[in-house]
Length: 159
Image (cartoon, rainbow, N blue to C red):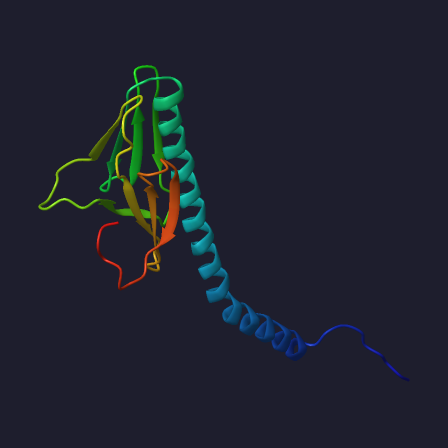
């Protein structure tokens, strides 16, 4: 009498689970690093769009606009006579500094005024993710267009 059994033994199942665990353990750091980079890129793009909207509002609608940047809350605020908006940074992204840096400590948010027909102020917002990768979103004073730059570890001077 011949008995044939079908199925998977416990040892085979443990080997498969161990292989899956090894693959997941090896790929997790690469995936999490990629997600951190995506969050940083998304936050920089959101800041560019936010600043662009504020600059356009001042020029096209001829409204005085105030941009307030809070490093404590990691948020940017836009206030005009007819509009009030807030941009919070995504989870894991913080506003580290506002450029140009001023001597001494400043309590509260840094404020910039956008006047219709006026010169574009030098605004720079340094953001960073949990891994310490930093980006600078700044308004080019010559063109008035926000742009994103990576910040190297050796680069510490204001733009």
